[in-house]
Image (cartoon, rainbow, N blue to C red; front, side):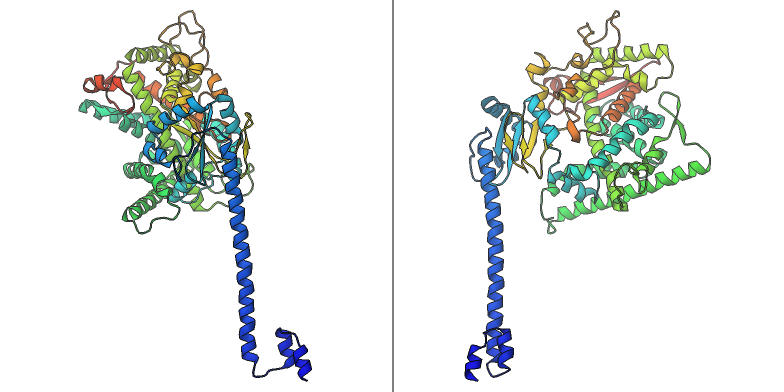
Amino acid sequence: MDDCDTAAPYTLLGLLIRGGDGGCIGFMRDYAARGTNALLWVGLISITFLLLQKLARLVRLWRQGSRIPGPPTPSFFGHSKVIVDGGVGQNLIDYLSKMHEIYGPIVRLWLGPTQMLVSVKDIAMIEDMLVKAEDKLPLIGRAFRLAFGRSTLFVSSFEKVQRIRESLEAYMNENLLERMNQVPGKVVECISERFDSIITKDVCDSRRVSQHIAYYILGSSMFGDAFMNWSNAPLYEELLVTVAKEACYWASYRIPPFWSRRYWKYYFTCKRLKELNENIIDKSLRNRNVATKCNWNLCEVSVFGRERVDGAACFMDAMMLGGSLFNGKTEKHNFSKEEECGNILGLMFHGYLTTASLINNILTRLSLCPELQENIYCEIASLKKKTSDLDRSDVQKMNLLLATLYESARLLPPGPFLQRCSLKHDLRLKSSITVPAGTILVVPLPLVHIDYSIWGKDADQFNPRHFLPKTCSNKDGTLDKHDVPKEITSEHQIDGSFLSFGCGSRSCVGQKFAILEIAALFASLLSDYEIRLHPASDNDFRATLDGCCPNIFFIKRSKI
């Protein structure tokens, strides 16, 4: 029997063969210890394997990064200090300009041991990069998610948002643009009322005026009449501006700083903004339903006096759950109410910032160039002599006005960098340079937009002739009486040298819509007002445009 016990395997089966005896407890303890050790070994091997994988990827990143031209790393943290000191402002642009002069059209900067930034300046490489790098930086996705909740439009991965973006772009450039080819009349009326109060004060801040204009353009376009009569519209704008200032700062935290009072203040500001957004959406849809029941046919008078269909109501219907924007054009999406509101609030937020920036730039240029402003006024007046009611096709014929819009966007784009990345795949550019996946890719817009080899000797000067048809012969950019008017050419946008609205698959989906809306707005405003730079800021402001926020005032014109 002892031989049998000895022969029994030292396992749980062996214990059952031997039967329960006094050594059972010791055996079970030893058996548990062996099982625990086995699990620990498996865990250790798994973690080691994962760490080796990360180390291999890190070594591969270092090897690939070393093949891209760039300055040596100053410290373990790379060039992060340059980024922090320069922010997204002129210091970083100046630094990249020097690096491009030394290392060529593509420059690599290490932001740390695991993160690399690559700046691209060459037009051919930019086009190639924008086609292949379709993703946004994760920071941008976190900023929108933290501020506005879940969204199906503002995510980092292009694969997840591609079909929705295509549907939205087609809808805005076809359906919405046809219904909203002029700035709504009530928006102009509201702005005019504000200008009347501004005139009495004699002076105003162009940036603040631009923000108001952009806010009411987008609000009326997206929410219709309900927005113009909404009592909470000023509060909505105030909260939108507050969130815009702090969104990226709080999104930079991988773990929200719950211990910070300032964070909770921002959190409740975002929460209140979401509540107001839901309120105006419901109000807009209710107005739409009431209008339908009352048989109003959703018509209103446009800025130029014609009736048009209320595109805002149709837009809201399309954006909401089950709307025509996504039906039949994408895979089935079960959007929650949070996602619907997040999409609309994200569009409002992004459009507000970019539109306000562009309007401010145009106001600044017009106030600095009274002769140009007078030429645009003459252009508008000549078209109004042919037809009393201007429509979208007439706005598209305003070459000088559109050229001024594009030129303002060229010299002062909404942001100094166009940012992209490829989250999953390495990018092999035409220059045989391979950029590792996850690398931050940037295009320094001021360097591209003020490239003398592309734009000529006056690349750093404001000159609408850069976007005018080549038949224009006058120095001030106007058409001579023998010149035949032609539509603005987009050759610079086609070849990738004009990037204020982006380029490639991630370009601005509302570019055409925004340009015509803003052009129609200025066609109306310049018919009624002359924009002047305030004498007190004239000398100081002409010396620099860094602040791009002059004091201006408006003079009422006699009717055309």
